[in-house]
Image (cartoon, rainbow, N blue to C red):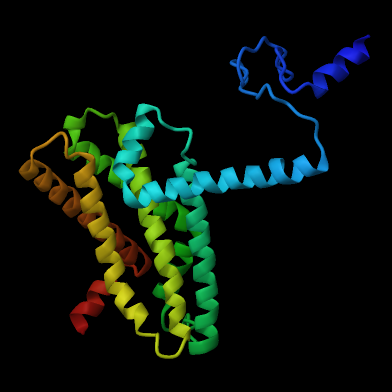
Length: 274
């Protein structure tokens, strides 16, 4: 008798009792653990076309949706996420880590190609500071890149207080903005492979100027849109200007401190002598 009950529960399409936690269910999902009530027999066809393909498609769909939102409307998407609309979003910080890892991989390939085509290895005897900086950046790239998110969050928390968001919520907005920045950087990094093609090596020179300008423009437009309902046009424009100015000063200061640290502050003497 017990065996018959177990078999019946296993093959039934809809169960009134959750087969995972054995609690009563009413609709399509268990209200306690979230498992679907329409359990099914596992067959080869269903396993391939549903469990594998369906799962991979929804995984990619969440990533693509989040990347699209980060590129086109990061501030508004972050506010919707804060308000509770979260099921369609892939974890922003996990996705940022994936993009950082992808960028590290792309940069490694480009370094190998540069060595092969242009013999660009640094000589430790003549450029020890540059070698130290490169080693530091490659070993701490994730930490360095993620340090920009707190900077964005602190600055927005200072200049956009009227929105009445706490620091953690500003952190979510900054994470979405930074994901958009990393998406721009990742896409643009693919175009640097044109350095190794005839008649297209000029593109990287254009990108070196265009990408930083595009990132700054991206931040200006999206921070303006995010907080436009809290301030007048003049007030919002002024606050965004101060936000970007402070951010650029902070980044410049970090770069100066890093270069100074790895050159033992001797770069000042070099500038004077030259």
